[in-house]
Image (cartoon, rainbow, N blue to C red; front, side, top):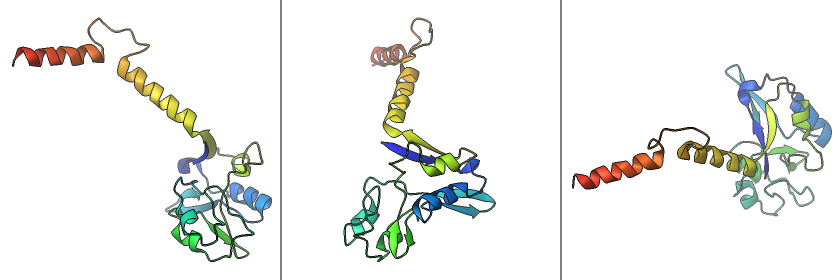
Length: 164
């Protein structure tokens, strides 16, 4: 699953992403907030168990988008969003759906600082697991015989048995 990743430390508050989103959708589905001189992009996190979907009385809100024809503009989704990422425009809820019809979401193309990017979470998880396994097993490192983690664990358990 692809997910938008925001790096607030790179955001300079130019709001180009907001403008690009508003130009494409009529209202911006990304918001830049300034707190203490730092800028924080707020965007839908595509929750797996989305509270906005759970509370919607008309089933207009889904994990990835809002069906405007079903939305009655009650605003409950906006109230329960833990990120404040649901916006109301013309009495209809809107949230980021990561521009599935575009090769690259408009906000990413507009961001000159590259504070917004998209990653494949499944690929990232596999890479992290491979890094962890390599670190734990010593793959790719030349080690002295008897210095890898399994040898150490085995030697430790043998020593404990010897002293029992």
